[in-house]
Image (cartoon, rainbow, N blue to C red; front, top):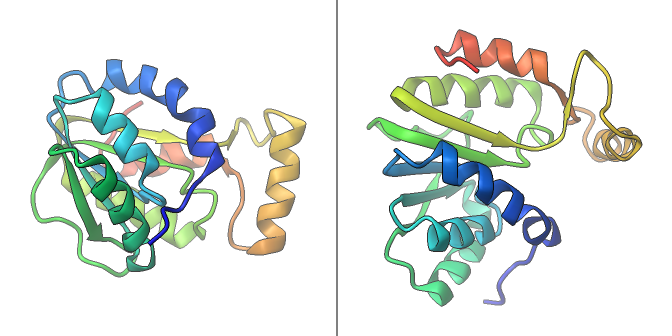
Length: 179
């Protein structure tokens, strides 16, 4: 299988890595929700070798993730778990870190709610959840490009869109997390 490729993963990987180096420094086991192509998992697994990086996504993305994993052959990046945040069972063990990139704006709001609740159930006390993506603050877009992106997302799927940070923060607090 030819590996899938996401240009945005290449564009944002270094910026995200700098945050993860700090936030995940005490962590040992990371669950990535929505591994997509698998590019982030490989890049972060290579640069954060102290972590065991568990990939996950809906089953249709697993072959692409495995293609990246097979080529990289990193012992600390694990094959994907089937995880549809609304329908699949979540892991039944605690994790000390969760990472997700570019997911909440492509999910419907009920799936976003399920994702935060699921993370709240598996994140160990003192664990860290890092979420990357575009966000609105106080109901306003942070850039004209995010406003255009939101229009494109909603044309593709009316249930998707750039999410308000404050609404996500409420979900996190309701799931036992604090900013």
